[in-house]
Length: 194
Image: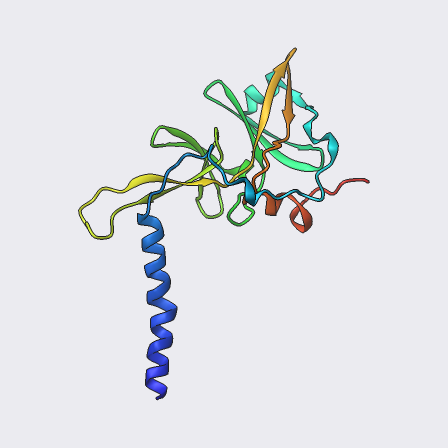
């Protein structure tokens, strides 16, 4: 009886999760991130009414020189990147485990510019906040891996330039984003003074 219990436990602990992972990786649903289920909308109790107001975070010349900068916009920590002539802003902590994205490298994957989290090498597109991963058909060992989207994982914020100043406006998108977990509560590094 003990052997059967141990074997069943082994089956559950190792084979079932591996099966789920293989099925999730192989299943490539649509990457239409504009079609979000708004029933999953989560309203952050820390979100204040002024979050739709743009905040000046620095000078255009400074970010063009350094290629990135960090800022606090209405109590939310963000990182702003200047890459290939465009500005991108997102939550500073990686959606996966809270890694410091401002310390990551920017690389291109499948024609999309991504920040690579320095902790676990998760790839996040600068333009949309999608998490990318490589997948291949487990039933075809000779298949070449393809880049796939996990959907929007990192909250992206709007960046505007006016009179040489960089402004960030926090996202007001009503869907829950994985990076929200590390942008609020106990994971915030900088606390508000109020």
